[in-house]
Length: 241
Image 1 (cartoon, one colour):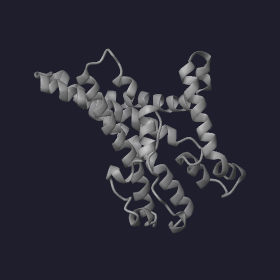
Image 2 (cartoon, rainbow, N blue to C red; image 1 turned 90 degrees about the horizontal axis):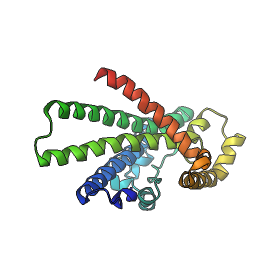
Image 3 (cartoon, rainbow, N blue to C red; image 1 turned 135 degrees about the vertical axis):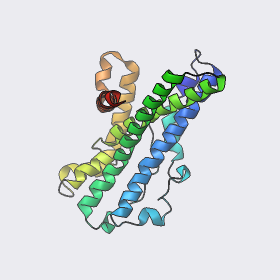
Image 4 (cartoon, one colour; image 1 turned 90 degrees about the vertical axis):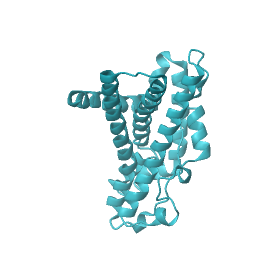
């Protein structure tokens, strides 16, 4: 994010537009991800998020200050996890699975919506054109907002699918395996350290480039998933629209 702001080839106006578009797309992606966890937990019989005031789309209730700053400066971050008590679920395995998959599903849906809106806006602009300076500014804002809406949501979805504690992918695995099996027990104990180590390795590998990119495990995983989904969306909606 901040490398764009220090890009000498961009005007101050373009930097401002990109910053606004990025921040709004990021806030919506993280907020709706956590809200999806909370509402699905509520549907499964758990009132914890509701009782703690987290069953809301108010970003201030979900954004974590340190996680947000890391996202802006480093490129990855997090929101405050919605509090959930699986013991309140009517069916624990079903509850754990549906709640875990809710956040990534929400991000996928948001990415699809942004993709469709980007195509529609592009078709409208191509048909009628942009006839004023103000119109050009609004076009840039929404164009960048939709682009970031696609990339941020797909990245957040793919990252959370990693089967590493405390990410959603781990809880999906947990829902389909025997509780406290060796993998789940190991991840619950060391998962945070494993995730941090992988993030550090991936960050260093992507910076060095060359053959080191093959050590960017998280980047390769995310790019494979996001690239596949973007190709599929281009194929499907490109034909429909």
